[in-house]
Length: 86
Image 1 (tube, rainbow, N blue to C red):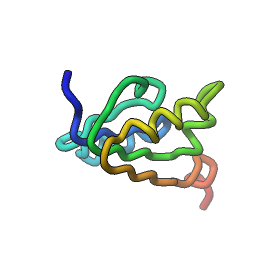
Image 2: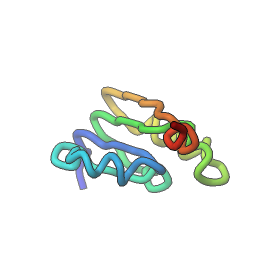
Image 3: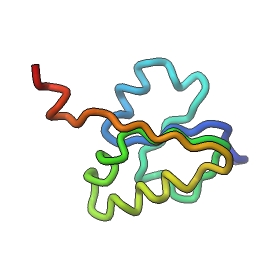
Image 4: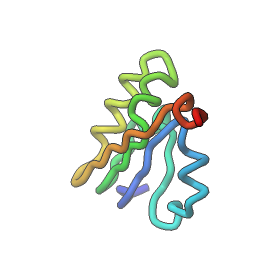
């Protein structure tokens, strides 16, 4: 497979992001599966959640942040606890 144009990487947020229709222009990849992939642009959603999702989550985040060859965007989102607070 050749290099992707846009890849969106997350853990906790994949289902929420997929429901927006973003898959029309970006491939969604769990951060734990991003190793070895390259793309022109990467959007990393929930970096703190990626760190907390698995042991050695810092490595998953590092991989997600370094796979972009041209552009990188990192989006911090509220944690699960913050989403459920009224």
